[in-house]
Length: 303
Image 1 (tube, helix red, strand yellow):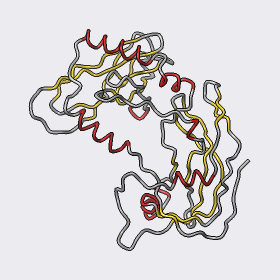
Image 2: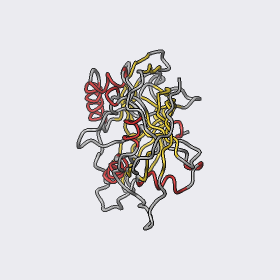
Image 3: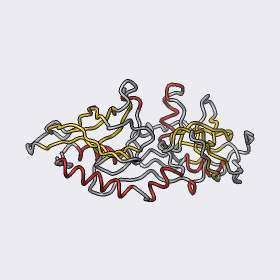
Image 4: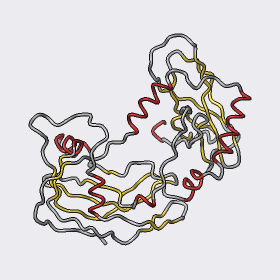
């Protein structure tokens, strides 16, 4: 049942910020490093050895268990209003953390919820209180891209909170998860924050130091069930020798073989696509990147 709260006396304004993913900066640095040809070219034998290492490292690991049986979100916990449906000042104020509570948010956590995946599996998770979700939603940003103008931003006055749900992409497919929605005075669209307690959330696997992403995403070709469309990046001065795949019963490891020319080159990353043909359709096997040993995400936008 939806939970709602009524406006209360206005406390002093709080200034905080909706969190901006620190991963944006890290990703930019990674792209620059990738453009330098740091991966190098591997012989067929070296690729086979690397693929076996990736498979052995993934099987039975903590990341493997969480990916298959836990709650691993592939999207951030904040659910902002669609930009096209809100005035520019709303996103600018939210980004800079100009918030004020005009309502007393309950500090008690609601009952736990059951998450259900497309394969029929379920997981019961605890939820956080509205006050906790608001505190997380309004945390200062790690990086302020556009600061408030000299006269300041318009304050976002929170006038209510309601527990609902929303679709969220996870390692095991898209599901609906509990979400705290916050109403802002004068704004038709609401701000949302995933209500699942952080203790029940498994982090997305992180790459190890010295390992660099090669394949960034993949898609399936309905007309050719054994083909995978791979998205990758390369430097302007790198030679491309094509994609490769290593297959087991439950995993597929892919890479795109690149060779650095060794000549001075501009520091940039060029996005490209290529296809690789497997011995049999991917099916429910997990795709891993040879460079990082981590899962490659299914991106239907590659079609």
